[in-house]
Length: 181
Image (cartoon, rainbow, N blue to C red; front, side, top):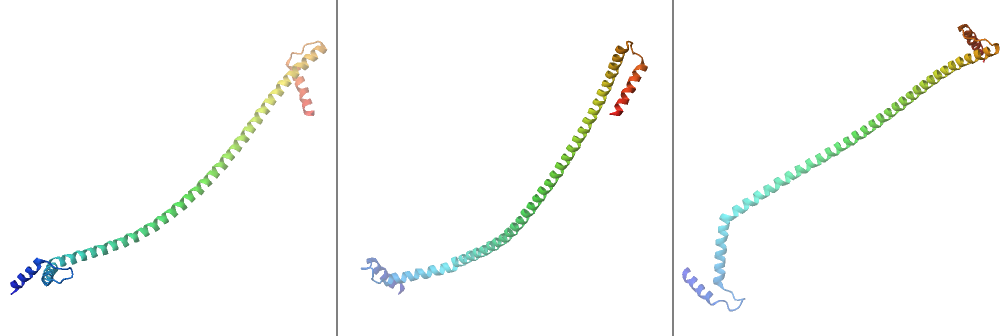
């Protein structure tokens, strides 16, 4: 009976529909048969694979979300630690700059003090040298004065004063003049 009915349907389908709105019962039956067969095949073989792939994908996405959240938390911690390191480095750099300034100021003061000390030493040495030159010049002047005095006295008296006693006499007289002034 089924075969006869299929033959009838096949004969009807061979001529084709007369309008697009015409109902073809053979086509409807074959469509349902193919749909049900395809549905059963897909349900038995494809559906478990699709469900499994979907579940695996869902697990993978959950795992990636968890890893992403963990990475986000670690990134926040690293950022906080980086900020702390930056603040520590800034404080350390400011401390180094302050220490360098203090050292520079101490070195500057030390150099100024050393310069003052060297200047005072140079002044003292220059004064000593001037005093020594002054004493030397005065001694030379005394010698010249003694020689000139002896020469003047010799001219006045007409006799030559070359002895050591004559020199001592003039030098003693000059010293007495020196103390009076």
